[in-house]
Image 1 (cartoon, rainbow, N blue to C red):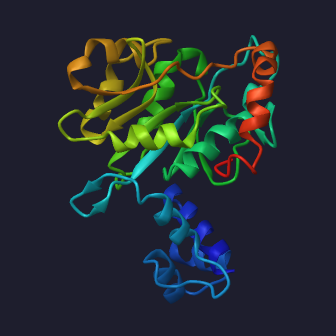
Image 2 (cartoon, one colour):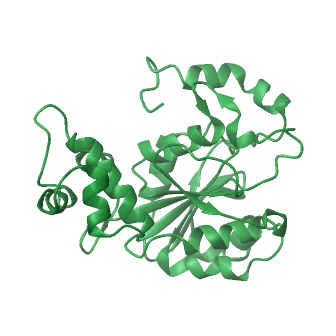
Image 3 (spheres, rainbow, N blue to C red):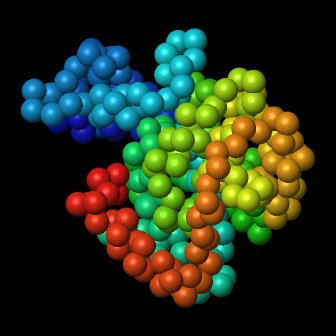
Length: 266
């Protein structure tokens, strides 16, 4: 009960739309218990609270002045899926949707909150906060601006992820987060000189997305600002899934990734 309430309270606080009495009614606990949960001082006898689970997953995060850095996830998933033929965000990837697979990797990497920039009518996986892009035809740059604008003020940084890369690994996201530093406020993965997501932006670099327009992502900006970018070397970037054939081509890899006996992060 306490663990379930903690998760509900955390999501409600992120959305910033719930008053105290709303929290009490929805979570089934009183104001004192809510305060204890949010401070991490109230745990179930049989299982740890959701807050404790999140804190364990964040032990790898770099330190800032007041403790581990809080890093949000911004998943870009507002595309129209024209080439896929149906909303690819909802396509099945193992036992999850494609968007759910990316969100799960972000969750296991310790990112919080997990924001997904979405078209108006599509659902999001549990625990994911939707950020509605009602003009997806305006291009990727609009999704980036909306996603970064939705990052809560208490977050020190945000990791940009692509919603059509279901094979992204939590371990890679952790490596990108671990490379963060104030001296270079942007971290990107580098495959043979090509910079691409996952990309971490420290709060000091959030304004770089304000200059983007049209169907332009971060790649051109990263190329222009290489002096501000710390890189994480990868053999290759994760493949985008644009068509059903792309998804089918990942079949064996996806089956391996979602085998919990070999990959507990999934």
